[in-house]
Image (cartoon, rainbow, N blue to C red; front, side):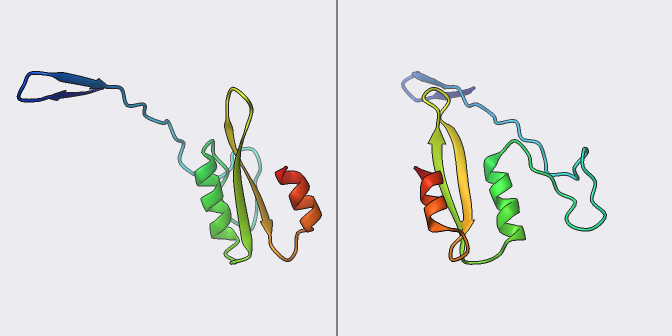
Length: 94
């Protein structure tokens, strides 16, 4: 909570919500002999950053949208332009 005091003795209370985020670590369920030792976490933004780091091509397209009437869950559709079938991409985005 943030309290602001002005010269006129007025106060404003603002509640700031802290997001609890788990750091990126090695996967605990699946083990890999070769390859990255990183696993997806609950944050879609961190997961998208992991993918962009592993697939550093300019043709990688990320289309973000929200699903659900109540939760408005953020989801992303990723594909490589020029490789993915455009009909499938259009179907997934609609």
